[in-house]
Every structure is written in C-alpha cells, then in structure tokens.
Length: 545
Image (cartoon, rainbow, N blue to C red; front, side):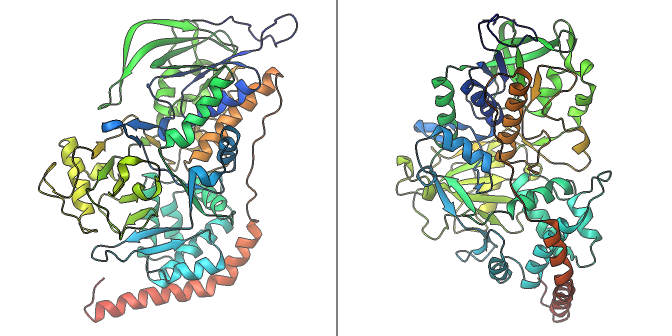
C-alpha cells in the first residue's frame, strides 16, 4: 500500500522513478491538483473518505437509478480556470454539456406566474433594463448598482476586515431596503448574512463578475457527475492515477520540516450526521509530496493529529486558526411533480422575502437527457437559511420548504409528507447535506485563511475554496484555482514537469469605478430621495408595502 519514500531528493538518473504525490480529498480542488500532476508524470494517489468523488459538485444516487446533484451550480463565463479544466478533459464544446443563460428570475408572493428578471453581465444597457425589471423599485435598483461601483472604487484598509453590511450602512446614499436586498442576495447564493460577509471577498467577486461580457451564466445539462466529475476522473485514470474512495486520512506526521507519513483507515460516511465511521485497522503511507484538499474542519483535525513525529501545526503554526473558519449546510429538496408546470422559467429563481431564503431551478428544463424528467417538472429547491427550519425531523424540514414554496407557485403541498396528490413522493428526495458544507467568507477570518504553500514544511500544499485566492467568494473557480496553485507549488519545488498555467482574470481598472462613483453621485442622491419619498407617500396614503 505504501510508496517508496525519496525524502527531499529530486528525481533524476539515480532515483529512476518520478516523485510520488498523495492528494487527500477528492473534491474539485483535489481532483484538479491530482490531474495536473499526473499529467506531468507524477505518481499520484487520491484518497477520498466518501464513496463518491466531487465534493460539493458530486451527484448522489437517488431512487430508481437517477443521479441528483448535492447542490445546483451556476457557472459564469469568468471561471476561466474551471472552463479550461473541462475543455482539457472533454471532447465536447461547452454548449453540449452546459446551457447558456443571460438572466436570473425572482418571484414574489401572489405574482405567479409573473416573474421579474435580472440580466447580466452588468453593462449600461443591462443596468437600465434591470432598473425597470420589477425586482425592486427602479430607484433601489440604481442604488444597488451604485453600491457595487462604490465598493470597487473604495480603497480598503487591509487592517480592517469590514463586513458588507457595515460598509453599506456607512454610505450616505444607502436605504434600509437596498441593504436588505443585498443581504438576501448574498444569503441565497452563499448561505451567509451580509452582516458577516467579508467585504474584501465580496468586492473581489464583484470585480471578477463584472469583467466578462460573454454569456453570463451556464448550467449543466445533466448531473454534475456526468458533466464535470466523470470527465476529470476518466482523465486521471487514463494517466495512471490511483483513486481510493472510502479511505479517510486521520493524521499527518512530520519528520522535521517535511511530512513523513499519512495515517489512513477505511471508513463509512453516516449520511444523517455527516460523520465518518472508521472500519478496520489503520495503516500509514508515504509520499514525496502531500496535497491536503479537505474542508477546514477536517483539515484542522488532520494538522493536529500525528501518530508519530510532530503534528503539522507544531511546524507550521500559521494554520492554527483553521478552527475559526466556518462552513454551512444548504438543505435540498428535489421535488418531483406529476405533471409539467409550463409557466416556470428555465432560469434560477429566487423567492422574494422567503423566510427560508428559498431558491429553485427547474432542472427538468435544462437536463434534457434524463428520461425520468419526461412529461414532469422537477425542481431543485434549496434553503439557504437552514437554522429557520423546524429541526424536528427531516420530513418536517422538507415539508416546511415545500409549504413555503406553495406560497409562491400554484402547488398543493398537502398536510404532510406524502399527502399532496400533485407530488410524486416515491421520487421526491430531501437531503440535509451535513456532509457537504459550504465554506462561508466571514469578515475577520481572512487573516487565518491559509495559503496554498506551507512555508515551514517543504513538501506540503493545501487546496480548497477556503484558501486565499484572487477569486473572492466561495466558487467552483476558487476550488479549481487553489488546486492549480497547489500543483504548481509541487512542480516548482520538484523541478519536475512543465510549468502549470493559471489564468488570472483582468478586471476593469479602479480608476473607471472612481470616475463612475463621482459622475453618478448626484443620481445616487436623487435615487435615495426618490425611494425615501415614495415610501413616505405610501405611508401617508395608508398603502404600506
């Protein structure tokens, strides 16, 4: 099971074999690092504690042979490294596996089937169209756009890691409704309130998102396992990588300034708690290079546990703050309806003022090669406020999501699980997702987010969307980019293999946003006056919103 250890010796005529690499974690970051290394001839082994690969882009096996995604994913055009990775492992054009979208939708209670839409990417023409989209009053929509410009124009003090909400409420043009709208957007997408969201990360994301002018969003035409994970895994196997699922790393031992061995065990993941249950005896393995691509909580435990030698954290104390990083689950209901609902849009839909911060995608319109979706509607329904669920039982939580959805669309939810005649209960599936947590970009934690390279340990790299990167908020792109950075660190240390290319998005210059902030400041003042005045008039007339 173990591989021969070569110490810090670089490969050459005397050693005969290329360097060995152990990648712990089979999520998107780990798979990316493993692929780029095995392509360059490294003897690569991937260890994943689950029995499926992909992490948060995995697809679970559902009843009757279907595969359903852990989370639905929207992939913007500006994910340059993500799209390059997929281009390298598939023989298809992007349009074959993904469907393009230029807008997202919103639905208010009582408005069905009238959906308001937002278009992107943000240009002057789309800004004007979005202002009058009905998502928010026109004045508020202008202020939301102006707030984004203001963020990009403001030079932040690196010693102050403000939250998005703190920044907004300091601005003289801000209104309560605009601040709430921003909070709803961030919560729905990243499962974190704007009062806790790092302004630096969010601003970086906005800068990236407004840099591209191509098709705005892409969504997979089938399960992520088919469109994303399987092509990467096939490429890994084709190049000779070894992939071991159902294997958990329980400790990392250091021998001086390098990782000496990894302690491993067979395991089974409890789907209800998300805990990994060990099976059988542990064993150790050795490798010339180690890449740890596991979530923050698991990584925090790994770097503190060592069966022999020293734990990682004693050699590299800078990663001691991992325990401060937080992740959140996003429960999902895959709701199978017995008939087609022809009035639902194909775009992602956010439910305005939802207590559970619900959003859904009608995947039966996009997944055009899934036989089970014929002649029926299937919704991927997500709740980004899991703490607002009853928490009594999984069925109660699922019914709370379905019942609130029924307040927005023409649906009879029934009086309990299995009661509605409109829902196919044999196929409908609820997942609490305790084993697929989303890292949340909290203000005040950027200083403890680790870098990819561990300076004090010469053969250890980290990867994952929680690592520091130039992407900003948690995305598929941040996972891929840190996987590439980890692989590049290995190649540079070993001097073995061709250099690894990482695409950096060229964002618009800050000077442009500073000019726009100055030029549009009078309009922002007028928009606030209009918004506040309209609210005052409605209150005066007794027409509360």
